[in-house]
Image 1 (cartoon, rainbow, N blue to C red):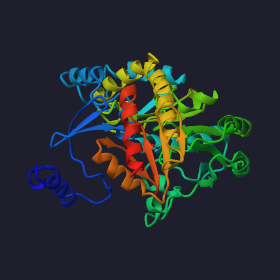
Image 2: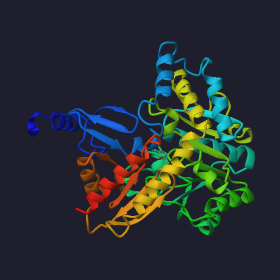
Image 3: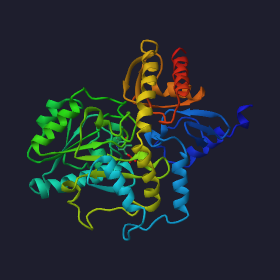
Image 4: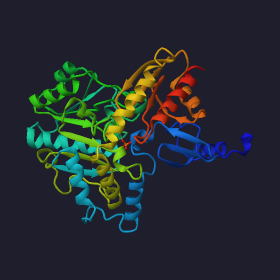
Length: 404
Ligand SMILES: *Cc1c(COP(=O)(O)O)cnc(C)c1O
């Protein structure tokens, strides 16, 4: 087939012509998907090793989730929170039980969950901790990624994400990630929360040193500061446990959830915390037109039930071990380092060989889709329904790319 007959080039040209260039997508145009596999407009198949940045932990179009969505579409899709709907209570209760927390607050996108966490922590600080008006401070980590709103990019340390979007929201202190002493030193009487990712996804799947998360927990408890874990990417099975914090037996005061919570079908996010924290909100103080809508709740309830079986966490642990073994065998053969946990890996490519972008383009030519982040780093986060054979296939294609 000559290039002119392919639909892909034209579809890419159209997409670039009519959109802001806030992304730099790989040159593939997907038209359908099932499980771990994507098909493009020209009928080529690709193994999905990004899974929508972990929004597709259960794979594309998981039958249970699709059935729940179809059934709900035919009954009720939106009420707003002005009225209660019949999907709301089950979702909130089952998610709260999964999180072992008293209460949840459903929103839509991850950034909204983070904003909700920040607002709740500040209000808790003034009303419960007794911080002086206007003085609340939140400690965050270098290399963080918590979303794209003006407040959230105010405390980003990525110049691309932050530059020219000021004036910036005050009230945040940035400390090095993984450094417990620096974190403890940054806390004072006005600190209301520590907000961190238990594993930094966008930064390249950076796992903190062992003992860091329990240390953060201890310091927060001692100083009467809320520990907010942004588990939007790390949570819901990705690392082999329900939450990445579970690996170190740590329970934060607040979970921020998103991405996979919507089953790859609808945007669903949530904050989960106990009543002494989330209970500070009264009617009129926070909300969202679409947050907790019936379609979102119907799908997300099934997501929570899939997670409650433990099957996906187990798959992530077992298949993750295979993935990491395969990737480690490439260290010194094109890879400089491999990090991660479960079915989640950050790979540093030897920068003398090629950039992360180039590696992802070559992988795409070989039918494997992954995404670069920060120069020579690639992130792999396949759907948790991926098989052993498919993992071996992905690793073999990566080996071939690195071998030139
Ligand atoms: C993706 C992500 C967010 C933001 O989620 P959106 O749905 O894109 O707003 C926040 N925190 C972390 C850790 C993320 O990975």
